[in-house]
Length: 220
Image 1 (cartoon, rainbow, N blue to C red):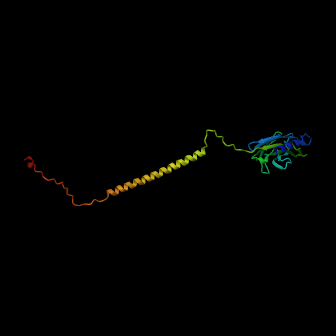
Image 2 (cartoon, rainbow, N blue to C red):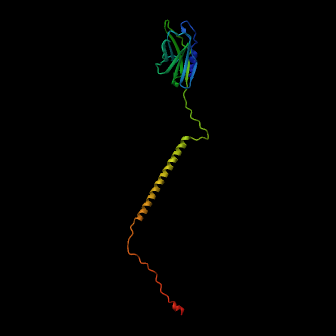
Image 3 (tube, rainbow, N blue to C red):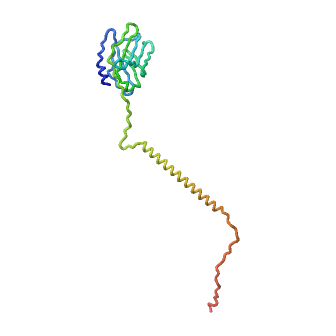
């Protein structure tokens, strides 16, 4: 597409200054990296105190009017677009600058400036200039480069979170089991201490019987 635009750019002849024509000069090509561009159009005519119209067209046949401003220097000039482009601009001494933003890749094309003197008569405009190719580059997000010894953050974070949750779950289960076991031992101890004792006659303690020995018999 860029090659066809370059061929179209070379096809248009150089503009010569004539009596009833305005010479317009544009940059041959502008490369857009951030979806916005300033296109300056220099013209050889004094527009002061005159009713004029400055416009920017898209395409080799200038079929799409991108941005336009009309009026005179005695009023506040407003740039606007009737075709959905985001545009603004500024008028200087023999220069009109169109500012475009939010451009898309499919809006890469050749753009032409047009200057017209509407009043007073006679009507004067410019011959078609060589135009400016605006090449809108596609934005590509480059992923962050990781060093060889660096490790991905999110997998480690997920694994760490799972391990922490598992450790917490095991701790809660063990603590619950320990509390139940402790409570069961306390209840069993209280049950044994509260069992009433049976009252009855005291038991007699019997001493073992041992026959008396006759120590006199041993003496004889």
